[in-house]
Length: 531
Image (cartoon, rainbow, N blue to C red; front, top):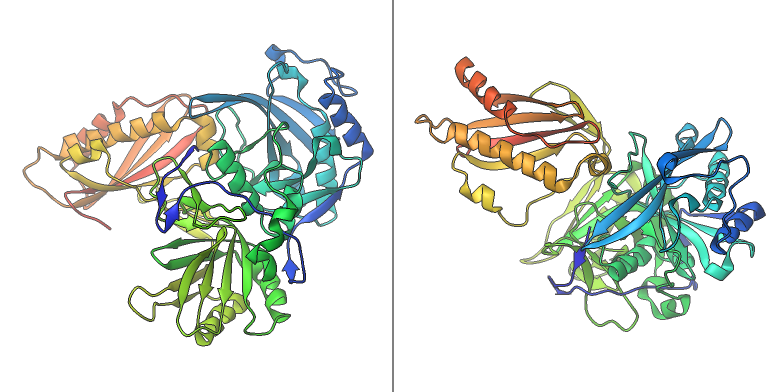
């Protein structure tokens, strides 16, 4: 999504970058190095030189019959589907190809989507075949037990890999929904190209340090999902020589955090416990440490940094107040008299007493949750929560929906429509379709418009009633290409006549067209009942 410049609590939004060398500090990571076969380099280099050859065994493509176009990369094991589509943001249209793998799940690895910007003059059917060999190389590495997830990076080794284009690796980020790209239900990662020293910086420090800079360059939060072959590297290792993060023992974990009002919210998957145990077990108990992290889903600002910067800087989504700041790392500095949180580069340092550090350290080692409250007014505090699969039970159908992570998005302001409603006093929306599927099947404007019309119909139903009974009304909206279905449940119950009347009104609300199934639930508070 687009980003903006503006004021962030404790600083201002801008754009920076990062780089660093290993030095003598302890560095742990969860990345992999890949040696690419010469065939891949040759095929991709040929495309860069604008040759219009077609891969062996493939038929020439035309716009009419090409997309989405499937290619069997490893017979019976791995195929790739190529989509032709556009990404639109801030009034600009970016023509793209997206490559979607099918086969990694069979090796207990998330599938990959890779989106490449098409340059002016490139025909739709001229998508680079060489990237198919990249997926084959990644597939073989996965078969050898080299699994990756969000926040990891893969470094290309060997002089054969397109050094003239300065492509040195790929990074893995959270996938974003792309209109016109149907990704299905398989777990998914998004891959982006890393140029120049960016790959080594992602390896040494944090991928977030690099992606925040690309987000700043393209004004896209938290980072653009597409790769641009003509983009110049945004950072160099030499710039990282004086980075504070380079002087701290650090470990890469698939964890995320954000800071809000002097409180740190740290979330860690259970799978990271062995990594933390091994890392902390090799260090003195009071040595400062840093966790290299990925952006928190609930954050609405991501710190960015360049050497020489003297104030906090961040990128944010459009219309965000920047109150929940995430970053590339979270450091812990024990042996302090008081607890304090301070910004440092593109992360935060938590200064804490030895007794509180012992509690935090034990939580990281044991996999237990912990809360360290502020010790004085306006003091710093931290909560550590180990992620657990959570279920949502629909009051309408009784079905239970499980997800590794449910993200709560809080409104930043009140809409004009909400201010005009009389009976409906608050609401929550539960998405029962993944965000990336929503983006592929509908638009935010269409869905928001439909939800607003549903809430208006509910308000018009309850507002004239003399008896103002407090209720919680849950409405399940199911949209398909064939039509829509509206179901609801109220606590306390409605009378049979009221139920029939409301059902008739909601069914008449015009529903948007969708490209596939979309399901969500609205939980509305009627006459002030909030839970």
